[in-house]
Image (cartoon, rainbow, N blue to C red):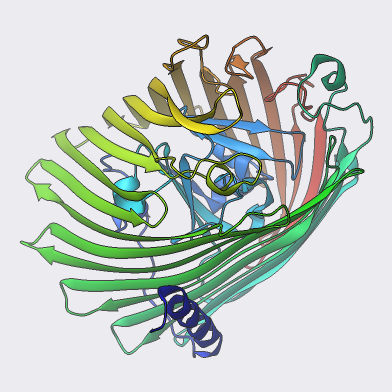
Length: 612
């Protein structure tokens, strides 16, 4: 009998080959202001039952975001920690949870992580991205493991009518050079988008030189520039078979090398995600969605004394049924299958596991009330069963004011390092588990939109290393927070901002009891502004971060900081513009991780062409 692994591999290979050969045909335009990540179905972003943010292509270009992490740092509840510039390890802490507690999706399928269970955000090419949806709060009842803090879904460039080429070139500080080219094409037969890019930068010295004497960061003093190179492409296409079946395929690929300081000095990486999705309107009230995907992250590290290699692979298959009942209620049933595997030079043995999951959801409206309940059970061959539930209720007080309250459970599976590492492992580890409560209120008054959300998350079975450096489920944490957002237009200036206040507490027994969880900023504030003057547009971003501690003992502190970015653009022609970005305008000297440098004042000049 064929194993599920063999069957899944065959499905993926056949589907991906098919995706390259089908004739393309148009599908309906996506709904404006609709998100899919919060419920795995289309829902209005203006009426969520959880905290949702959307970063659009327009915003990416307006503020000239250079990385995915930079774009995400503008949102409430997000703290970024970077180890020394472009292409260096970048960790995202969503609502104070761990860096491996946030699930990352690409066009609906899961992104492969590194062996520590964390996504490699630093390599994703932002020029290929159409929009980013961020759902804060537990999402394991829909997505399974790694959704304690929330879920982030990245969508690559989408369909457009006609043939529309695009091109951009940029030069900047640290001998940074970037070139991107692409096109979108669509007609009554279908659509396709393609983007390719190349980024090369000399970088700056990642480690600040204090590490060797203070015993922090890279434990080295290597005063040289640590460069980065990334070449990438994105392909996405869709077709309609008959009037009721839509097919869509995509591939997002990037590879390159990154230099840094320490025991290892260079990483050569390759990262790609490929997927095929089929959607069928069986009847006017019943829809089926199915997808297969393959995602890989490979890395080879080199140093003066050692080298290492990891290959991390994730294969997935999913099928989901959505049925509309009683007019405005949607009943969802689904099945997810995942296969994860790590192949490492340093002797990981049998480092693979399969996971079967079944999930169900019911959502709908009853007058001014709306609700959502969901339940998922995961069966993992390595750690067994885990069940997650979520329930939310909302009420529309007035046409412009609404409130919601929610409860959610989530979990994160032990990483491959924790379970399979030959240098200390624990195969008996159980998933880290959480319970969260949230209450939110939002409204609109004339040109002023606002929201406030308060939440509490309790995490049990946190995995930490014991005195013998063996991972154990012996830690607990409690996270309390409140997030404010607002947007308005004042004297012709468009303004939007957020304020996040976070209280994280280590509740494990021992010397660190009551301490703040490391590398989380206790306060963040962002204010974005832009104004257009004829052919000119001026945009700015002010980012304020409170202090953070770099270790569990809270005796290594990094101070708070404020950065200001300015972007000026001029429309040379209807399809052509030039931009000048000055980041860290006032040359703030700061660290997000103790011992690792961040960039000083830096400049990027770019030319953009995009057919109208």
